[in-house]
Length: 229
Image (tube, rainbow, N blue to C red):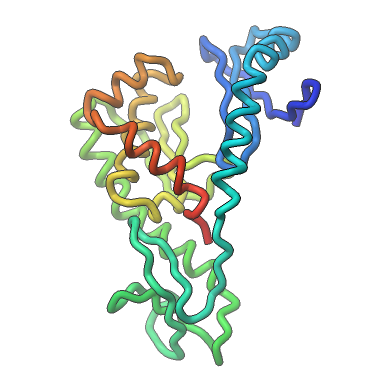
């Protein structure tokens, strides 16, 4: 973690051609720059974007003020593909967690479920392994690109990421989003196979296959804080 005046940030250098600043999903400031950019040039970039950083950090704090703290008790709501399903603790079933009869049925022992967190994560991973590659295959054909490897995993700060060798990683939390928003995340990452940076060219590629992407993007920005356990 680096710091310039009152701005704490993480710096990543790569063979990219342009510099970008992001407010990550956890509220941290990430700076991505070309390898040849000096430290003083990075600081000039941060100074020039100071108002933008302040505004977006304040917005992040407002959105995350409504973050829900969920407990593994009967009646608690958990998101899956944009819908909230109430939790039901059960004494017997073949799997630790099942979505059945409109409920998330969680295996418990006398009302206690110490492994609930792991059970939910595994549920979303397995559902993602089935659904997300299908959506990648659908959209990559339309976009004329080809992902190398698609993985569902735990990502630190992002909903998804695209590597320089064409691997696309998706956070298991993506499975909490509505199908239309999940598709937006897929298209967003596939567009990075064409354009690695968020230039107008990048957004043009997204727009070609998803003209209403801005609406889906806004849903994710507004509701993303609630997509958690």
